[in-house]
Amino acid sequence: MGKKYQFWFATGSQDLYGEECLRVVAEHSAKIVEGLNRSGLLPYEIVLKPTLIDNVSIRKTFNEANADENCAGVITWMHTFSPAKSWILGLQEYRKPLLHLHTQFNEEIPYDSIDMDFMNTNQSAHGDREFGHIVSRMGIERKVIVGHWANAEVQKRIASWMFTAIGIMESSHIRVLRVGDNMRNVAVTEGDKVEAHIKFGWEIDAYNITDIAEYVKSVSDSDVKALVDEYYDTYDILLEGRDADEFRKHVAVQAAIEIGFEKFLTEKNYHAIVTNFEMLAGLNQLPGLAIQRLMQKGYGFGGEGDWKTAAMVRLMKVMTAGVKDAKGTSFMEDYTYNLVQGKQGILQAHMLEVCPSIANVKPAIKVSPLTMGKREDPARLVFTSKPGKGVATSLIDLGNRFRLLINEVECLTQDTPMPKLPVASAFWRPEPNLEVGAEAWILAGGAHHTAFSYDLTAEQMGDWAAAMGIEAVYIDKDTNIRSFKNELKWNSIYYR
Ligand code: MN
Image: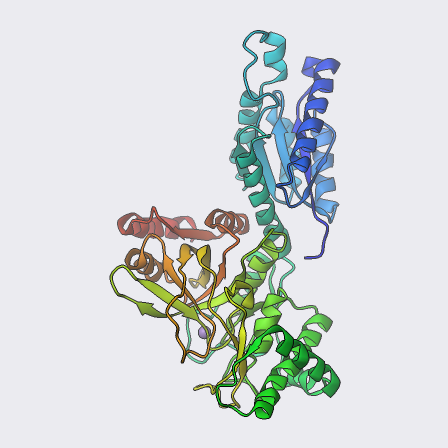
């Protein structure tokens, strides 16, 4: 995050049709790029590159794209026929996201005037098939988007792909700080960190919790007071009979944790953190409110040492960083069901750590005992979550490879109060329904922890997984258990 990313637009052609044709190609390309940038629908700027007509110019452009740290991907389009052997070396050396925009300059066939000159100049239907063939033959992962460039739906799909491309680019910069190992005896949160580094670029490092606790202890009283004042200005306070001074002291512990943790993360350049409630040496409370606030600032988080979900939360935070009117992204856990017919759903929460970016109401601070963790009662933010569709993901390690589960879910309005529940929550119904959704999730080995976002689609997450070279399984309105079980079997052959 923080980089000013751009996407390059590279039009393919050749010199067979003469100077006049190449002039038209360049003019059309410029108009398309200008139109796309002006649409107001794209989160990142598109930069026009000179028309690519031969092996040398293609190879040079792709290598420049690799080297340019602001370039997050190349968009290709064949205006005329562009013999695809010219693309082999450039594509072979190219390492960034690739979008093949299968469009053409004119929307309608000019029936009155169309002649062979027009056909030779405007033959994307022809040229883009030649280009697509070589990319497929070379086994290169790319996105193909079809339609007229001025169409808003096409532009929205390009925008959606841009967010995916940012995820692919930023994935390899994710660094996860572990100050708690995997919870004892838990299987699904385990995984191969070396393989994750190879596949995703993630760096996952451990520190003693006491190292970060030193940072917490050294936070000044005045800094703590200032942050507690900010909390009291920002959130409602639910004393619920507790003494106001004692309550404030509990909140102050979380303020010191937030400041100390953030300093540690910043100094050591980490973007996600995992804790474990069993391993809290040097801390007076399980980080709750502090972690919730850090997540809202864009850090990834996973509970009980779950570094895979922590990295996924960070990834999805990065992918949604430029989304207009974003509804939120959080670490989440499947907790308990409502199985009443017609009201089915899964209550989502965690011990404490749910990101307030998904809150539907002004969050409130509560101080309540933890039944686990053997520390003083931690302060936490409580709230319910926005209604609406989202995507829940779970990255699991199957021993020899990773699988990403992607479940479309719908968060329902939480209109029945839960006055005794001391944690933030969401209530969602998985697609296609609770019974099939949960059955498919369990058959695929999905975790209880998820990385959830309202602002990403299954398509985006699946495209990210494809770019990483890992299996993605979708659970959505089309999921059918018999086909799903077969898909898992077939995938196990392909991905072994
Ligand atoms: Mn958990």
